[in-house]
Image (cartoon, rainbow, N blue to C red):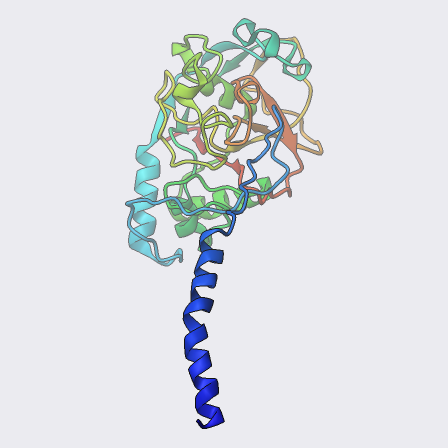
Length: 303
């Protein structure tokens, strides 16, 4: 027999044996282990979460502020979402319902009197930011998700451009306006969180968020009909950060100068203790946290 035919015959005979062996190896290959994330209580995760796209049913936007239809639609929605907050006097800071969770920088408690204003029931969405700014800086993408990964300075640029389109005077809330609204204004029931003593009812935090922000307004609102003032994303305020004083104040604006701007509201990675309505932190105005947790909510003095 020709030597080439002999070699070919041997290969044909050995082929099924090799295939069976490979099949056996594949079937018995051990599955890779899945490492469960370790979350430190009351602290931000050290590992940056992978950006996710959350499904939504909203109409896609053009990505340019020149898209007049999308811009007008989003602006009309924003104006319709503004909620009237009747002015009044409240006690600001780590009040009794905050219990032993209240931290030293939430005290001393003090009385604040505010004039009436309007505040948006939702955090600024990525859809609105996109049509105004022509970009979306967010780490977690989705039109109805809150915009995040924005600095205080970024927020000022957004507000300036928004006001040029609308002819209105949108702004960030003062810290006192933010807390008064979060407490439910004159309708406050003195909850620990914004709208409830049970955080899962009103907030996306590290106990239920899956370590990602969620579409705005998907939890229950507070007494004024405002959503996500505990949890989802942190919200910049207009004030420079300072320690509290015990004396009464009227329409406080915060100190005239400083190094840090106030941030309020808890977020998707924060613990329940960090999502309380009197909890406060701060950051430099240029800080843009790309992990996806710094956002904003808009206010108008007059509608």
